Length: 297
Image 1 (cartoon, rainbow, N blue to C red):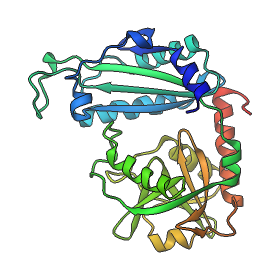
Image 2 (image 1 turned 60 degrees about the horizontal axis):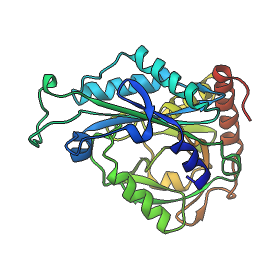
Image 3 (image 1 turned 90 degrees about the vertical axis):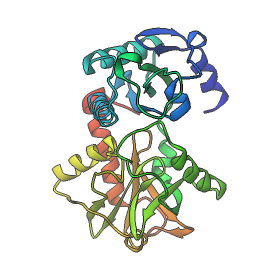
Image 4 (image 1 turned 90 degrees about the horizontal axis):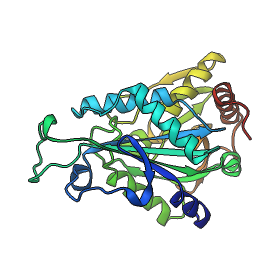
């Protein structure tokens, strides 16, 4: 985030538990389990024209993750969405992101085991940032590296424990690349901060949902719209070899939308330019955004 956006973020209201407050008013206890154990969950939701895109799906995923870690959330799905809408309106976000996080709260003395629910109060926070769409990158694509997937085996839970992802992303950064594609054995799983898909002979392949990858909201939208056009979609694993021999490759996430991958481990994907299928998928994704949020630029 550059200085302008950081300055703007500091002037915006944030959510702390159930209230909109000034950022400097937020106080998180040093014994909060999110701070001590990364015992919590998060979501990032995109905003277009001041409207939350796929908010229902993101909130549903948050509640699914909470159930998996036996975390009782302090709000209903409807209450959460309404609170997020109020934050977007208060901060006048037209195009940007909303980051929300919930931890299990304070538990003392420190204990690895979950505390009894009646003895803790979950801590919820949410912030907004102004983030324009990166149209140049969406056209020119990104360059990536491949790395062994050394993370845990509950990647389906959107945990705030992201050290494994961060380490992979940093390796890509050190090599002057944008992202890291991860693999277990010979099978490609996902990227450090996005899902990964390939196109071969006009067929879209992507790793099936399960414990090894995050069930991406953006990926799901892309697959649904692709199927509606008659495109063949196969949710099955593909190998590193198949990745590097693909006709087209793209990453997908809330913030990147459908992002062409034009280079892998210093080797070009196809001719090193965004391919026609990925361009079509980008257009379909924008059409879906506009059906919910109005025309975007």
